Length: 175
Image (cartoon, rainbow, N blue to C red; front, side):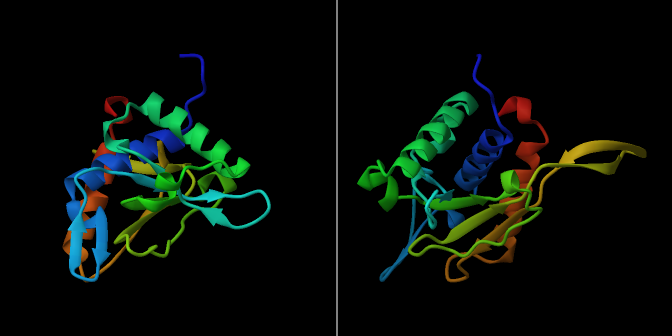
């Protein structure tokens, strides 16, 4: 494929797959309780050129290939900045990602956008020294954070989500 693949697409794909396996971070808290979503509609925070942000959804992000996610992200950002989003894209994200890594930010702690119950923060991908199996090397590292609604989940479920995200990112070629 001739189009450039950015790290964001891999991070979004891994996030969507992790959200699918930990349903307590993927859904809505409404007046009558938590409603898990069977689909992962991944909201992506997009900075607007004239200020402010929007977080439209890439629908069924867990079922898309990394290339399809990259194309969807490119399309979504372009339409968001042009003011051409569809209403459904704004109304139904089931979990949102804020990624400030492309701006050089090492980590970000997001604020949940109700009625969603979780937000994932992603920093920049950095090369860092890393010890593994007694060997020291350099590897890409990203800081991922999770803000979650404790009416729905707890630290154990948050840890499961982050561990699954880490596991998926260890094998990006399988995403």
